[in-house]
Amino acid sequence: MTKSAADKPDFDGPETWPEITRDALELAVRTAANLHGLPPSCRMKTCRKTGRCQTEILRDPQSLCQGDWTHAADLTVVGMFAFLLHLTRHWWED
Image 1 (tube, rainbow, N blue to C red):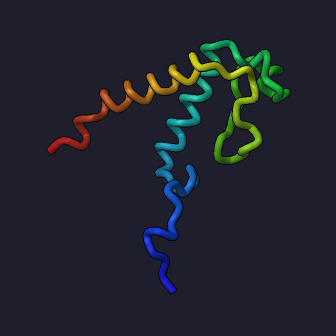
Image 2: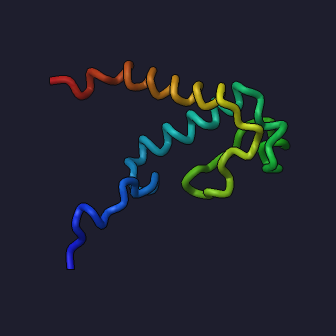
């Protein structure tokens, strides 16, 4: 039995993304957390101990940033992806 398009979820989850995309997301989240000073307030002991975000979004979903994540940190992640898209847009142009 095959699945129809209606049976498929709209979002399969980041585990289906290309590795480079997953790595970029993890790096962006860690960088934003560090820039916004979140590790000292994080509930993860390793982040507090090292003073750096230690999230491993896909390897350990429980490690997702547990600091006092802010809207400004969200915007930083979005800005990093906008920068990356602008920087690499010629890769897809013919």
